[in-house]
Image 1 (cartoon, rainbow, N blue to C red):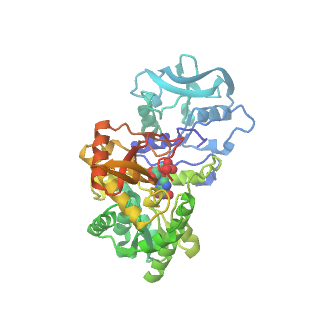
Image 2: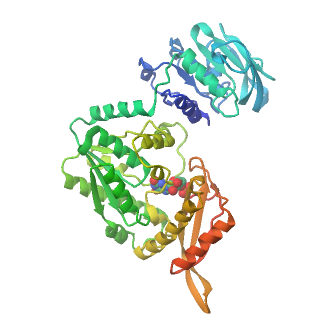
Image 3: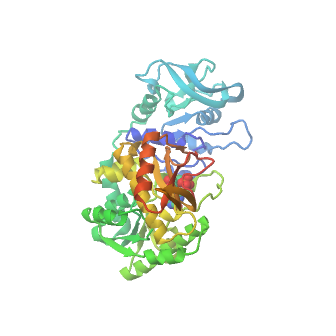
Length: 501
Ligand code: XMP
């Protein structure tokens, strides 16, 4: 990975072809690759110009490999430079769609010889590297694709991983199957088998504690661990009083059906009393985080010797933590039970750390999780505490639970729940004047938030039909005592965030 905005997309495309791959920063320890199971390399694009003095490079020894290398954009310039090619900053930056004409090459087997590709770069190849030849050109770039067949090295100046490159998927598949000779046998079933074996090897006779949040990730992790080690998994589900209406009960019922060794702990009063009088969002988040750790510690003491802490960490979290991008500012402190492992010297077990979110959903599906559960919108760890603005009390949470229940139920009724990435209600810390019958009212205001998004990093407000919104608003005001006004949040992220706190 040389820092391209498309690196994750390359990984996605490869995995969609049922080939396992990992993203590794360019400055990782190369001995990691002294492993027979590594069948080929892809060098990603990146924001740097290779002509800059501090441009990222790989050690020369990397290129002694007898395994195939595909360089994409910046990756192609690295290959070219390594073998004596000349790269210059282009006078005309080519950005966006271009017409590409492919010559004969195993990389371009069975594709249309004329196709649209996606370019995004500022450098261009002016002198060919030794033993390489041109295998494709675009309107303005003679050397838009190069290859050295004897070394099995290929370079593409365009981005095959981007949908706008019409033949991109086939080109990547040609690389994987024709050139790297991979099989494409990485499926959910093989993942489950491999993962069970790994968990058993790691855990041995030890016991594993796992916090259940009621979300898809921790549930799928629990299912996988149960398959691997049965009752040596101690799954702890804490009622913190901040879950949605009926959530604790319905998740419990499901987990019991899935035969997960479950411990239920009601600590809602403890959470509520610690939150009493606190209205600062960051303070709320910190209190909830430390309270979770305290409850967890209490529980594992009660359970006796526990050796491992399981977490539903996903691949994007792993990439974030190893990435060489500068540390980004903390917008909100996301809670997790990470602090626990250091405090109690537990070893981490992370069975989902190789997977993307939708791969976890697919895994859940083949492990037997019902569709309705898998398709649930994300729900934040601090729960309703960050949706009850101002002080968090049981009464205010109860009121919000009723409102939110109606909102979500109606989204299901109108068949639009699955078109929305996340929807929820927020209780505002103000009151508003209204009129009901002949009476003046002075009551609570709630906001409804529904967003469309791909990954939660950016989001736009969902364009729900005004008639549907009107129906929902009427039902809330008619049925939830104490609410006389409903607002719909029409801000996008950025500059707003999805949650209000
Ligand atoms: P924001 O509000 O930052 O949220 O735009 C982006 C996504 O993250 C969820 N979120 C959290 N998830 N613990 C979580 O597990 C948290 O503390 C947390 N805070 C926000 C939020 O619901 C949205 O999906």
